[in-house]
Amino acid sequence: NAGVTQTPKFRVLKTGQSMTLLCAQDMNHEYMYWYRQDPGMGLRLIHYSVGEGTTAKGEVPDGYNVSRLKKQNFLLGLESAAPSQTSVYFCASSSRLGSSIFGTFGSGTRLTVV
Amino acid sequence: AQTVTQSQPEMSVQEAETVTLSCTYDTSESDYYLFWYKQPPSRQMILVIRQEAYKQQNATENRFSVNFQKAAKSFSLKISDSQLGDAAMYFCAYRSNFGNEKLTFGTGTRLTIIP
Image (cartoon, rainbow over all chains, first blue to last red; front, side):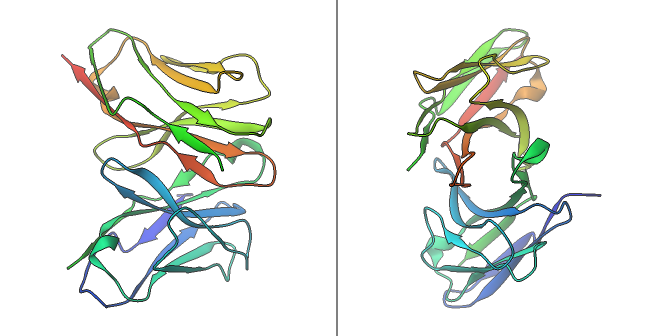
């Protein structure tokens, strides 16, 4: 099925540990996004990419890094996890033009940092 | 920078009645898209309706319609004949069509349907 796949779906980390969240899309979308969702805060943009090999900072980029080496994949890294990074993370992709300009979302990753 | 504001953290409506969710946005651009997304308890983000800023006609999708007021930078969502399955978080979102491809969200409105 076409769509956006996030792995893993759940993860518990200890403070200071590192991890990478993987987002993969098979719709040939140019744009990809990483968001975090916290109660009362909506979805806040962490980083985004407008094409292979490009990345840009969103609203809350501190403590995160990203890479987009292949058009279909967008990786979100936490180098040294902190409890403040406990959140639900969503990846989304969209096309630049046409009927898919809205974001297609993955099912989310619930991350707990203890 | 573009901002999206949803001033109603929670709303409730009787089943079969009509409810309107508010959204305002701030931008200096003239060409952009606006969206409403639904997030049920399953956590999945689902597109409800979209509006292109250059179109004066308000978008409609079955029981869902918008009131797009470009000059006032307002984009409200009207749900008619509310159903129990409409209970969810609703997010308003903005995306520029030129030079800034960020998809920016409001903080959401939790809609409860009263049987």
